Amino acid sequence: MDQDTRAELFQQAFGQDDFKAPRAITGKRWRVNQAKSKKLTFEELYQIQELQNQDVPYADLPEWILDNGYVEPTKAEKKLQQDLTDKTGLSISERRSVFNAALADTEALASMTTSEILRDSAALDDQIKHFINRYGNEAVKMLKEVDGEAAAYVHSRLALKAAEEKATSSDESIRQELKAAQEAIAAQDSTGLQNVSNDAIQAELARRASIATQDAAAQGE
Image (spheres, one colour):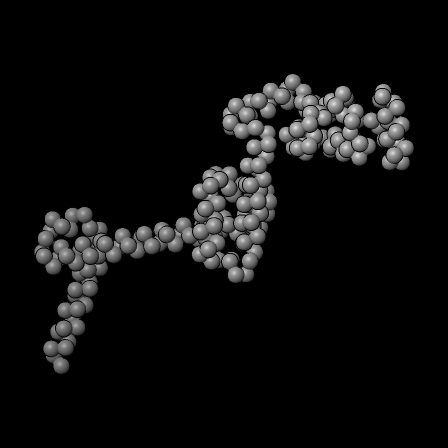
């Protein structure tokens, strides 16, 4: 069946005056395999035509098209796919599975950020941490592509947690310094004060002075 005959049949089947048979090459990515596509139904051929019109990348074509060889990649596309396979160790279908899994994880996290029960919860913080550990530097970018508001929320949540951790760490550091100052002053150990900040020493001296003042006042009563 030649191209003109096929175009005429398409027009009769779908009633489109300006309908054209599938182009041989679209977007320099892939072409229809004329031999194998002969056994396709009009509906299936129409789907391929629509994919061509949308300039869908070769790797994003439905599996039933790729697996049955109804289209074939151009040399450049074939080389690109082979390079990706060599780099990742994954076939097209495997890369698609990984992408779909990542997309599902991203959509799930985005949904959690809008939940009244989970929002601002420890459970959501754990999920954010797991998501970032799994996807690394791409995590926030992935989320932004799916839901900008969710990405903004996660960014602010991460900033808040970082500030809290810094404050906790700072508080602990201050407590340790004050403890060291207390011990050194109590033991009259000047060497022990060498690694203690002046602020901590002054704070401890002020504390001791306050206690002494209170004791003196109590004795005078």
